[in-house]
Image 1 (cartoon, rainbow over the protein chains, first blue to last red):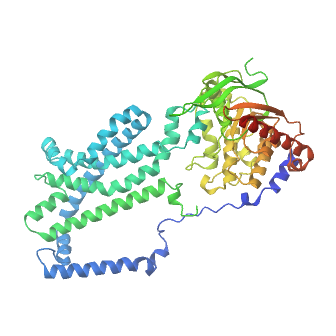
Image 2 (cartoon, rainbow over the protein chains, first blue to last red):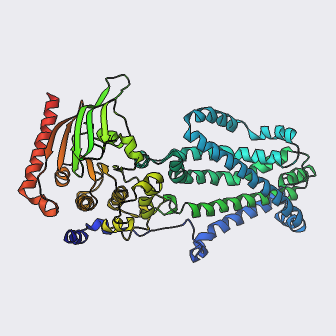
Image 3 (cartoon, one colour):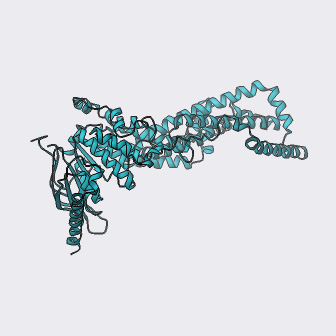
Length: 287
Length: 268
């Protein structure tokens, strides 16, 4: 048998031996390549063009756009005010997101495990999704007051649906042969869920999270705008400033909101890169 | 006689798939099959002859509409619960987020109660099995970093690593090129020789069936049935040299003739 084994290793066909090295090409790597003008110059030029257009617009139509300098001044002078309000909005966004994530994930597991539950829950979820949240928000403010509760609910609701749909799709995306292999060793339903279905759903979940992380800021702001009596948050800051015709302050808040959304997007991308290091989309084209 | 000298026994098995707005498809009609313990039996036949259905019945993935299927004296579901079965499907069916080593050990970690009951027999560890299959350098790689042949070898090690009494293989090499396929056949025979499981091997390759099997079951479609059982008396181990001998060709011709017979009987 040993002789046969030796022959075996020698006669191993070549195509088997040529294994593609683990090529992993991240979308951008934090190396020196990033410093090449080809990487940053287009964006810098684009920003310069936009700033020029803005300045020209602010100059010719002062009621439409505030000068960039004014926005900068406002941010600098009232830095504490903006940081505090940004923090409030960010907290609302993240807590609402957490709420929506937990609820959607649990329901995704339930609906994918029990077809009867799916038939009951999915239509309701769809109806909830097509109902404009901007319309629900005032009702929630009436019901729950000006505190954090309506903001968390609105944010949670806005994050809920994409997570539910994607996760429930991912949980059911396990190929038949895989399920058959584990059925012949009598893996329990819980084992199949934990070892196979949930990891399989991760790329689907992250596809939803990439949408929902920035969206959570939208939810928080919509809720703040609807609660006219709120005292904190960037949404409140915007409605306050616009009622007083302070255009520079409005745009200062908007700029911070854009920044928050971008930071959240970066956060979820970094998280995805860690969790889904095995996934094709993380491994370059050849890998 | 549970666990005696008969590993798989199928008696009068019938399986019908209902077809919407047509005549039902009889995938298996009154099929009898006995597989002695420790033997390597191939099932061959044209597509639609019910060979995969037969395998799924033995695996407990489907139930027969009529008849009786036993694995080591018990029903397939009980055999699965006791971890007596190993399945190698057509696709490797590996989990893309687990390394090769974790992929092959996961089946041991599920249904632990049965694993503990079976833990008596000492033998080569998973690492050793992977080494024997030429996967020593791939152990900590992800499936996407392996060639198709290496992925399928991983799937075979995963099944053998369970030390199953019965190994069920559903055209495991059909997606591979001929060269890879022959090398994998050799490795499969090596592993089988060492671990002594009963193997039921579904294939549509005549030479593969002849090379691997003690017994070849020939099936025909519409309705799916067994038309012939051919005993293969070739010496083991069956290295690459055997493939060129006249005896090997004799068996290939024999199986081809019987397959053609099954076709013509069907057309008549």
